[in-house]
Image 1: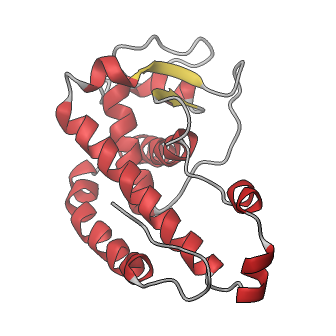
Image 2: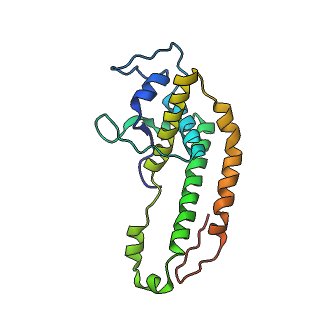
Image 3: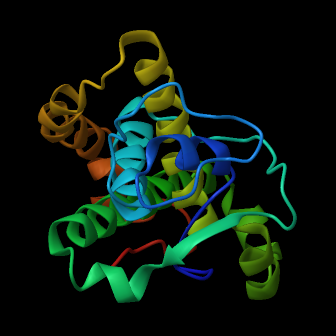
Length: 194
C-alpha cells in the first residue's frame, strides 16, 4: 500500500459536526446536542464500510489548506481498537484484490505482440496502484452518505450496512475470483500471490 496511513478526510466539516471529540466547525453550528460518534477513528471506519458497500469513492476537493484534514495517525489508535483496525485492513485488502482483478481483465485484452513490445518500466509506470488515498476516498463517500442520513432521519442505519457486508463481500469476491485464479492467457506473468 502506497501512501501514509492516517485517518484523514476531505470532509472536515462533516467530521466536526458528527464527532464528539472534535471541535465544532467555526462556520456552522450543529443542530443537535448528541454526537453520534465518539472519535474520528470510529467515524472513518463506519464511513469506509458504507463507502465500500455502496461501491463509491468521494472525488471532491478539500476546502481547507493542503489536500486533507488529518484527524489522527492510524497506528496509535489502531492498537486500542482492534475491531476497527481489522475492518479497515479487511476492506483495504478487498479493494486491492478488486483492483488486481480489474487490472488482469484489462491486461488480458492485450495481444502477445503488444506484450513483447512493452518494457517492464513501461508496465510499472502505466499500472495505477491502490493508495491509502483511495481507501480514504471510500471512507469520505461513506461519511457523506451517513451525514445525509443523519440530516434526513436524525439517525443512521449502521446495522443494515454492517449486516449486509458479508453478502457484499461474497458477491464481489465471486465476481473477481476467477480473474485471480486463472493462469495468464498471454506471454506476461499475471500470477497473484497472497
